[in-house]
Length: 505
Ligand code: CA
Image (cartoon, rainbow, N blue to C red; front, side, top):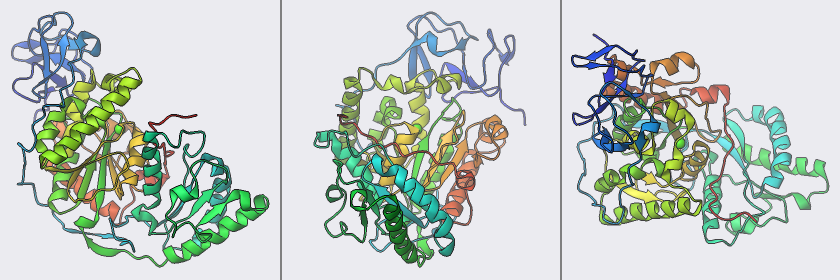
């Protein structure tokens, strides 16, 4: 099979993406010669584009030519103006409801059921929560001691994880948007991997109090340690060790059971995207998402600024007008949030995205949305909310990897699939993260960090359903504890950056 030089997404597109670097002078098609060196993943003009003319990829304008662009030239981000974002006031809902999804090859997995119901766990972890950053240093010392002295005694427990964060004090706790970080932290503490065990470390003078964090039933000395009430450091360590051991004994009794896919919540996120992300890794994740949803699982995708330019495509897939209106409301909230900071969704793109051939957020969004597959959207959530329905869900979180991840954990995500183009070692201690790369070169560069390579889709060596099905199996194996993803093998865990749109005082 001859490997293609370029990939064109739609017949109407007037640009194509270079599969590998194309040198100036290369005969790209019968009637097209490259006029510049076209870097891998970057765009070549397939026709002469006049000044002000549309630059089309994915069948939509991703920008407008600032000056005339000759056929065969490299199109970079400096040569285009961004399109205006689509209006959310007049979106059409429910006109593209796809029901003939591909069937999954298996319908069960092995997970940990929880006493309070909800989604099942993919790991068995003692999660130790904090009300405030001030408690972090003490907790970190205690956790090192717990891991050395306690964890080996409880072999059915996978890990002990501190939910450290920057919230809790020095913040406008009564500001309307303070509900966002508070909801995220409360819901992370109920993560399905924590088996219903509550352990909270407070300082004693912070604004985010145990009373605010917990229900009255939970807020007892059985579950809460207030450092101010401990007589010195050693007493703090003793109290933490005693409480942790009590919780570990209970968690050690947890066992995996064969469960239906409806007990699994998978989150999708991309980071460090390139122009291949929308051709290989994200559509492969979309295929896996369709398989999961067809099997009854819940799949959550997020990242508002990365859907904003194609949001009408999501509106058409909302199951009804109520869900669609919620989608529009979340878009408006985020537009306003960005405007308050003097920017718009265009602030999303990174130097890595641009180096990877993504000229702007419009192009990035079209490649990002395809990770959601084709299933109907049955619910839209604010950041950190827990789903009430099963199926495909849009959670309106920031796109920042390290902010989106904690939001998805708060929603109960048992496993995250993370698509990358230019590469990031991102990982989460609370739930496994499967890494999918968009190009063969990325897998060659980071063979022991990338779990699944979607690059063969671009080179014609594999089909999208083949890689999507491979990813589906990987999700089931990792969720069931039969396989460790690379981030878990190497213990590559990012800090939890909690989304706080409210003021800091
Ligand atoms: Ca991201």
